[in-house]
Length: 332
Image (tube, rainbow, N blue to C red):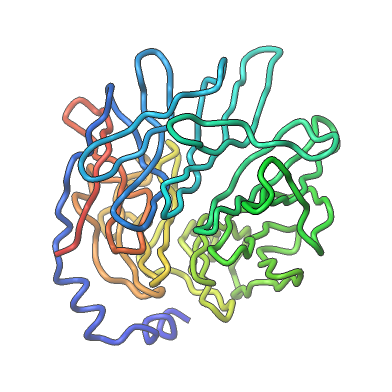
């Protein structure tokens, strides 16, 4: 199966990608650090950063940053999507003894606002936003254990709707594609909901516990256990599974997961045999359409978190004091 995956990429394309160097550029921040987790696919990225004593959503564009005003009493923000118009979406959380609040948000101007929940559901999370402005996510209650996939349609501001063919389920949706397709984690494995139809993704002998982390142009990446080893996995547009050569998936300290763009450029962890460090969760590499290309940047310091459709990659770099700062890399 690894040979099959490698054949998906012409030798010339893989060689060209391997020959390039990833040139890092530091992204400015208002405080000590930050992490880009979303992109507008036009050179801009968004994420969260420490601003004073609290965390706030932030967007980077053309060498500068913009900080979004936040909702009261929210302690943490996870930015999960940004469209080409620069609208960001994500999930805000408050969690301390006796209080647990999770809500989906979107930006409007220079502030973020809460998205409405559905029915009696008390919590919500946003997975992404497409260029038409449609936001996809899910809602759930405090005790049912069931999640419902929902959409906040751009054509109907302030409303939330369910998606046809997706009844409330105990498992969570994982990611959303530009066309509105949703990656689902189900008891039977990973599947894709597209226009009301659910299609199961493929598997391999020895592949257990598959988990999806990113979804773009019909392709999925994630991780699984393969014959007892934690590995990265790529599912092609036909839904076939391929183990990423030289990959690992030990993220013991919560470092960025595997990412993919619409052209099939992938970043993710490499195994210790190829320079990774599983105890630290460091050491990243690059694949294209499931085929190995090269190590990414400085494998001891660089943590790519989001691949843009324009080929740039954003993430963080570890300094001499062990602190991480946001960076963007360009391949040349």
